[in-house]
Length: 129
Image 1: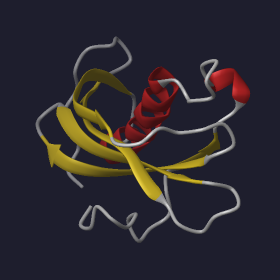
Image 2: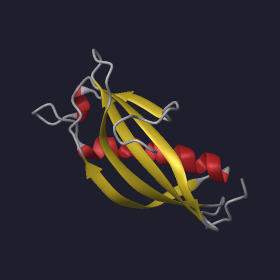
Image 3: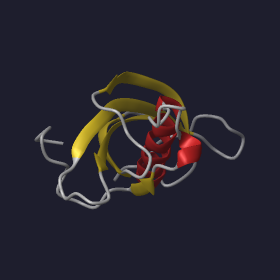
Image 4: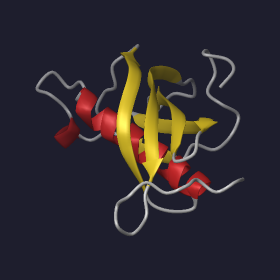
């Protein structure tokens, strides 16, 4: 994800509107809501890459740059950084846009680690691309 001032030049894996139920009394969106949206985007990328079920095992380097407010459109971009035998590192960026604005602002980013699992919830090999 090259330029931290511009969102990636591809469609986001997830777009969501931040709703009042996701906010604290001051109108800021809870970090946990944003993190769960990021985990969904990372899981989508991991499942596509591994062609099957995956589980989150770690989240590293989560940094909140700006708040998200009720009514903001949140776009989540994910990219596979590394693939091991059974695990994958997925980088996720979250960008917000006021519904009446055109500009987007990065609000947070993190690296998620997933392990591919089989039907018995045991680690399985990630197939080649």
